[in-house]
Amino acid sequence: QVQLVESGGGLVQAGGSLRLSCAASGRIFSIDYMGWYRQAPGKQRDMVATITGGGSTNYADSVKGRVTISRENAKNMVYLQMNSLKSDDTAVYYCNAIIRGAWCEAASNYWGQGTQVTVSS
Image (cartoon, rainbow, N blue to C red):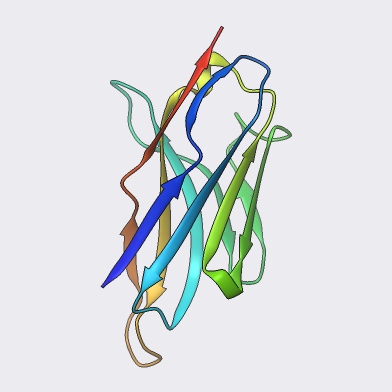
């Protein structure tokens, strides 16, 4: 089995910064893709940022220039550095990864349990 565990959420004032971390553990042969999504109350879950195994990144327009995604392949970790936070960034942030358990297996999609980020104005 595979687990994704997020950490680093919390309460921060507008204009502040937070760094989220996500650790993948378990039966992992390779991680094809990792990403961060967020879901505000009453809204759908939206992509924030994604990163491939080769390091290619993609960001939502709403966070470009304020957020940086990075990963440590050797540790199966992905990070989300968020700066200049706004009240609109308040949401539960979820880690997502597409992981292969063995070289011959198809990749599966996994989600973490989420971490709350609250930005006070």
